[in-house]
Image (cartoon, helix red, strand yellow):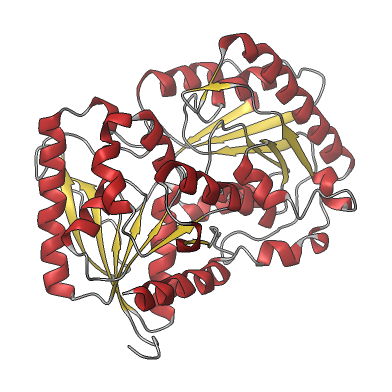
Length: 417
């Protein structure tokens, strides 16, 4: 272990290792660590009857819905791209069942794999369980932002999370703003928090020759939910009648919010293509043929889709969230000619972290419309953007680059124990 050249890494995720940003992150970590010769093992959640959800390494799954756990997987977001439950709705009996199931699988996995280090995801219940079960195994945990939201919205569960999460050796934050939030909410010493960021797959997301902007091609990729701002985006686009545009709506969701998004989308007629959930390869193909990426979300950690869009040569329309500004700060400084590629919309006042006040909806929709019009007109004038201005910054966000920082977090964890 002295040179840390080859480690046995146990990856722990409470959700499915697909369909979400944290799932993509986990799979990228497994791939990059395997490229360095590390051995990997995964513990994650899965729907019963569908447990072979990654072929990247050996794995064990906690099976949900009439199996190890009787109910659907609780999502780190309240709206997930698959059927899920919410932590805020779980009874004490539900939580006991959840903790017992994960504890059982974690013990089995550690006994079988004998990891040198544990890399868990989210400063939440499963990371807390893991730390309590294995206090002597070095442990690093990635915060994805949704865990901070759950911590604030489910205050009755904080006592389950806080003491053990404070004992994790190293925390990996996605941004400087997120690091400050972790310090404030969890009272964790700043020196235990390393900013590693998040990345994108540059073998999939890269620029292509953009089509003629007749119409201008826009793309949204994410959950179909209110927290992602989808209804406001669709209403703003509906009111843009004098410019040619076509929207690719990519993603899925559940419940009434998804149904409302689809209802609003269908009102746009032939100006929208509803794709549903797509694999990364197909998403990348659409992004290469799109002029503008739209992200009207009200809450994000470090949104990977912004990186994927920029790397694919898309202009950006997004809310001015801290994670978005962390990515775009190198593009939109006062001396940067690339700032014209990016329009940031003022995020409205929010209640419960990701719900705008009703009285602010009109102003937000109006501001979003203006930003969309700005980038549509710019695309009509210049469909291809000059990525040479920002290529160095984009390259720093590849998964290979991110894993160099994650490896430093691993080594710091090993040295602390």
